[in-house]
Length: 199
Image (cartoon, rainbow, N blue to C red):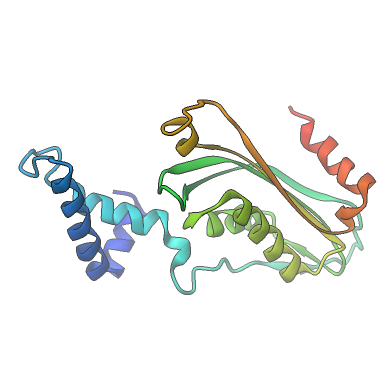
């Protein structure tokens, strides 16, 4: 059990019990033997997992971002790329996962670099759409920093595409969100060029 799962179980015992009851009903409808030692505790495990995976829904879970004055008057691009994330598709409740890439050009404030992945995690930890996730991350950065501009690109694989339906393993979905100065093509292309440089 992870630390997050243990905390969820302590903080929300009534939710654990209620979710587990519904999961048990689903397993019974599927014809599974709940006396099987491999299945017996599955409802509670699933309930705890859901509270961990969806902790971005908790009240007060929004990340506390550390902002600093831009005393150096830095006016070029700040990029954090290849931020791994995991989320759950709101259509089928199966995982999608990949990497987020974020850039902004500051005005008066800069953000602590460790906070950028936390912003991605906060919005990823809920039933989600990749398009909405991309817009939410860009909107959060734009609102908190009031920068010259923000751009977010997310690349992800969706198990609802790979495991079911069309069944296309390896298909990659790419989404982007733009604010401010990134609507200018040269600025946008600079970010994409830096994004494509690996190693």
